[in-house]
Image 1: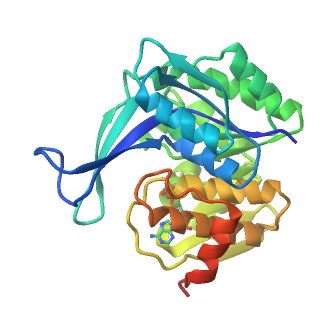
Image 2 (image 1 turned 30 degrees about the vertical axis):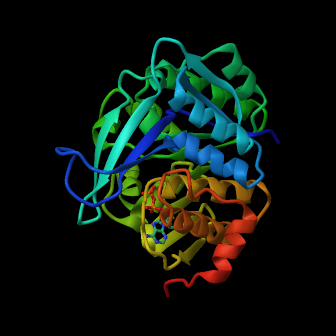
Length: 315
Ligand code: ADP
């Protein structure tokens, strides 16, 4: 019992409407859209009716307000989101290349997102949480490490669970964060990697070997994201479930993994069978890529049921 909580960066995303290369000339942009992987994740949890709380920091500006209003409206507890008078809310500009890749310009390094601290409000939220979701990408923020350590202990002390999305670059794992990264992988009740991240987390080149190694290290279950191909779920008892992806036209892939993970987790926390949870997660990820804007594709069960009824799946 208790809400699912996540911690990390909250920002806005501004997107180019046409495909092309870089930002070296003026171009048509849309946005700002609320964004930040932990914010997308927790918003999707709330939309599915799971209790949800976010730990973060925004600036006292319109970009911060956009995020706070969206999160509040969707039912996320934002009592542990601090508002900085000194640092602005960060932004990311994204442009899609003709080959489907992405070019980013980030204004995050000196933004409010780096000012996250273990405050009394953060402790209060963590002390009543039932599940903690952590993202590898946020661990490089100094205050985050302390928050993750505190929240992990608090959630575990109450008999709660943890999940980890190891979306982190290799350089970080090899660097100073290696210890905390490995501990987060090993202690995760649920690990949510994409293909490459699975191999990196396990330190081997083969998917089956990686799964076996991680489950032997103590991971509860592994849910592997395979993009358009769907997903697979591996459990400690040796079972495996594969779930084909939905056939959709990809408009904007940002946020798919976060929507997917939040949906799997929330379905499981509601007592759903792993296969059904994986099916809903595939639907949430696929629907998200059909919408422009990272958080514009979040969906409740009613919307997901409609999407499932009207969308074919790969075989
Ligand atoms: P990440 O965003 O973390 O890299 P993926 O791109 O694998 O993760 O997306 C997460 C999930 O969203 C996938 O496992 C799949 O279920 C769904 N998904 C993502 N892209 C597509 C797509 N183009 N078509 C259908 N489903 C998709």
